[in-house]
Every structure is written in structure tokens, then in C-alpha cells.
Image 1: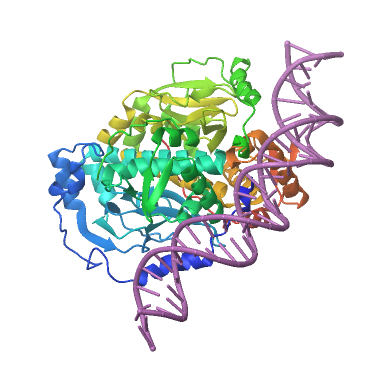
Image 2: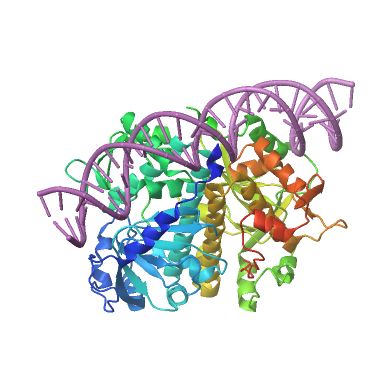
Amino acid sequence: MPRSITPRTPARQLERDAKAKARVGSACDDEFEVHSETPCDECPLRRRRECFQPIRPEELELIADMKQSERCFEAGDVLIAENSDDAPLYTLLEGWAFRSKQLPDGRRQILDVLMPGAFIGLQQRITVRGGHAVQALTDVRVCEFKRGTLLRLHEQLPSLGMDLTWLAANGEGVVDAHLLSVGRRSAFERLAALLLMLWERAGHFWPPRDDGSLPLPLTQSHLADALGLSLVHVNRQFRRLVREGLLHMPAEGWLRVDDEAGLAKAAQMPWPRNLPPRPLI
Amino acid sequence: MPRSITPRTPARQLERDAKAKARVGSACDDEFEVHSETPCDECPLRRRRECFQPIRPEELELIADMKQSERCFEAGDVLIAENSDDAPLYTLLEGWAFRSKQLPDGRRQILDVLMPGAFIGLQQRITVRGGHAVQALTDVRVCEFKRGTLLRLHEQLPSLGMDLTWLAANGEGVVDAHLLSVGRRSAFERLAALLLMLWERAGHFWPPRDDGSLPLPLTQSHLADALGLSLVHVNRQFRRLVREGLLHMPAEGWLRVDDEAGLAKAAQMPWPRNLPPRPLI
DNA sequence: CGATGTATTGACCAGCTTCAAGTAACGTGG
DNA sequence: CCACGTTACTTGAAGCTGGTCAATACATCG
């Protein structure tokens, strides 16, 4: 299986991502907004009890204290460059993003897809050796933390330090699962597994449209880079999933899974798979 | 369809790994040794200043306090099963091990190779959803920690809590790099990259033999499972690396890299790549 | 000395990439 | 309003990477 032929993402695509930066019109008007619009104790994310663990008042207070500002990025913007050694620390508040790494010749691997609540930049702060890039898939709003946040969270409230360890360890688990896919699942299984996971996670944050579909702001090119496949082959396998009645795309950017159990079977995944609530910092 | 795409590790192999458990003759006589043979403040691992960060006396004291015992496993033993929800916490003291995940039908992906100093079990303690298995490649000695170690390290010494976060985040970085390989490197590049990484890391812990070779207790079958390739194809690419004069195996289980720069070039990797010292807990 | 595990090699073929071409949707500027 | 450029999605044909099957060699071991 020539996954090793390893498709090289056309330079065109990478340029496109960069060019998106130049676009105008975003959900937020000021990229450099300095004041926090939303007080942490009213953070709408925390109301999603099924996603996030409850928090104690003193924890919330410390987090609010470490919050520096909110920032907005537009779809395609690079939040963190791959080799930045002084990356900021964010929590994703709204929108989609992804983490990726690249080979010198431009081949790109998407490591993980980020949804609200994701804690961004932990690795860059810690590991010296080349980290990963983080890029926005949609317009995005993040909460930026002050310098020294990691240390202070650990020192002042060990329970939050524990949460940081939790987030880091959980992140590794997510990549582990993805590596199993890319290494040992067929193209068909791989795509099924990824779409099922995205469908499950997206359901936690966005309400379905009237037709039951959820947003999926990944292009097939993104899916290809996430799965280690070529764009063309992702398309073929996607068509097959549709043909078999497991899912369909009512509109570009919208996905509807019609047979979750069937998709899970195609993906060789256990189902259902209730994810426990996670810490939100 | 063919699950054929992805090579399925023969059941034979997995059985073999299990059977190894039954073998006799190991470096340690008693698998259930309860007392710690080595006081933490004399831990020989800590003398490797180029690998591990220095530690303060109060940190060392707490760690020693949390140490429960040392245990030995034989090559092939399963230290942690893939779906155990109550896994212990270890630090690898001697020997080699690996982390892996499996699909229901037996296809196996090796996620990471573990060498001395590796902190084992963090993910299982944290993530509920199916974790990974940990298995010994050679006879192995580990330091087992008491229950509640994670919490106490965080609560009593935030600097150690920070180290835990460091280890977890770094672990994710390692898997990220591996995922880039499996997803986007050709078979040849992939094998070169893995061997180069193992060569580099092994050099930190084991002295070269007279012929300059280092131990490499992975069979080609292990390499295949780590790289998402078939055993046969790993062999072909390995022969090619030898043919091109980049490395060779003077004896089974021993590797000698003859041209590090050339291997790095074949692997599409930056070189040299000096790894910073890491925390040792 | 057969049994087992590991490395090696050849022959064949299939999964996936590449190349190429074509459709559709959208925004732009004339 | 309509050409025109851009991006995303589709589909077909050809060929390469890497999988499968099979057989050999070689070591270690009870």
C-alpha cells in the first residue's frame, strides 16, 4: 500500500492557506483586541456540562487572573508556526483549527483537529525540538494567557496543574488513536474512523441543522493530509461511504452521518464511545 | 474489502509475545520483589547528566517516598494491557519496551519505543477511553510508584507537577513526529527516520561495542508494526539502507550506523538534533 | 534433530498515487 | 449581466509502491 508514495500536498494548497490570511471580513473585527469580552465566570463553554468538568471558584479566579485577552483569527490564519520557540498559550473559544507538521519538501501531516476547549501551545512551551503548527480552519476566537501561566497554575493550584497534565496526556491519547488509524487501517476504514470521530465531537459543540447535518469545515484536501492519503483517493473513499448509505454531505461544509453504527463498523471502531468530561482551562 | 491493505500481524507473532512470558531466566530473579534495591538518591540513571535534568533534594525525597518497589519483567511480558483501567505507574529503569495499540482483528501499531527514564502509565491513569499496551522488548526493571502518586507530586511539589506535564507533553511530541513519518514519509524514509532516532536515543544509554554498534532489540517485525508496513517490505528497505552503506547489522540485535548524516538525509530529517535533558521521576 | 523464530528473496498483484480532464459554485470586474 | 479566475469536488486511465504468497537459509533450543 503505497501510502508511502506519500502524496505531496501541492504548493498551491499551502499558499492558499497562507493567502487566506489576507482575506477580509471575519467574525471578530479586531485581531488585536486587548480586553477580555467575556468574563471567565460567564464563559459560555463551561455551560456544556457534558463536555467539561465542573470547576471550583478559586480555580476559576486564578484562570481569570491569568487571562490576558481574547484574540480573533480568520480562517486560514496561522496561530502558531511550526518552529516558533516562543509560542503563546491559548484556549480555543470558538471555531475550528488543526495542528500539523511538515517535511522540508512540503509534505504535510495534520495531527489533530481542534474544537472549542482545546488548550493550545502547551507542547511548544515545553518541548524544544520542533513542534507543530496550529492553523485556523474557520474564523476563530481564542483566549490568550499571560506569560508564566503554566508555572503559576502549577504553583498556586495543584488541581489545575493536574488538569494540565490531564490535557497533555489526553492529547497524546488522541494522537495515539490517530496513529493507529494511519498506520494500520485501510483508506476506507481510516476515513470512516476520522469522520466518525469528527461527527461525534462536533455534535458536542454545534447544533444540527434542520436536515440533521453538522458543520465540517475540512476540505477533502485537509482530510487527505490528516489521513496520509492523496486527495483523489480520499474522494473515492468518501464517495463509497456515501454510496453505502453511511453518510452524505447535504452542502459543502456540512456532514450528516446516517448510520453511526454502520460507520463505526466500517471504521473498525468500538461504538458508542462516550467521552468523559475534560478539564477546561 | 480487503483489510488487506494494511498488513495484519500474523496471530503467530502476537502469541509469541505472550508466550515469551513463560520463559525462564531473567536479569531479576523475583518478579514480585517488594523492597527497593536502589535508593533513589543513588539511582544510576541520574548520573547521566546529558539525559536528565538535575533534581533538588526535596524533590528527590518526595520521589523516594512515593516509590513502592522495584519489579522485573522478562522480554515479551506485558507491563500494561491495552484496556486496563487500573494500570500502575512505572519508571523504566533498565531495558527496552514499547507502547502499542491494536485493532479488533489483531493489526497492531507500535506507537513508541521506550528506553530508561520513560514514565509509564500516565495516560492510562488519566484517559478513560482505551489506552495503549506496554510490553517489554528485553528483560526490564521498573520502579513502581504508590497509588495517588500523581496527585501527591502535584500537591506537594509543583515543580514535580510541572515535570509531569512536561513528560506528558513531550510524549505527545514524540508521537507527533512518528505520525508525520507514518503518514507522509515513504517506506525508505520512514525506516531511516526510525532507525536514526533509535540509534540516537540508544547512544545515550548503552555504550557501543568494539565494532561501534549499539543494541537494537527490535525485530524487523517490530519495525514493521512501528512503521505501518509489512515485514517483507521492511526487510527490502533495510537491505537497501545496508546496500547504500548507511548502516549495517554486525549481529542480530546490534545496529551500527555508518553514516549518520547520510541516514538523516535519507530520512528527510534535520541533523544533528540535540535533545535537551528531560525530567526524571 | 526436529521445532521454532528471524532474516531474505522472488513472483505476482492490488491499493493507492499520479496525471489529466471536466463539472459546479462563487466572487470579481468590466 | 456575463466572461473569467479561483476553489472544491469528481471521475477515468495508467503505473508505481508496497502487500501477499511462497520458499530458502540460518540460528537457537529442548
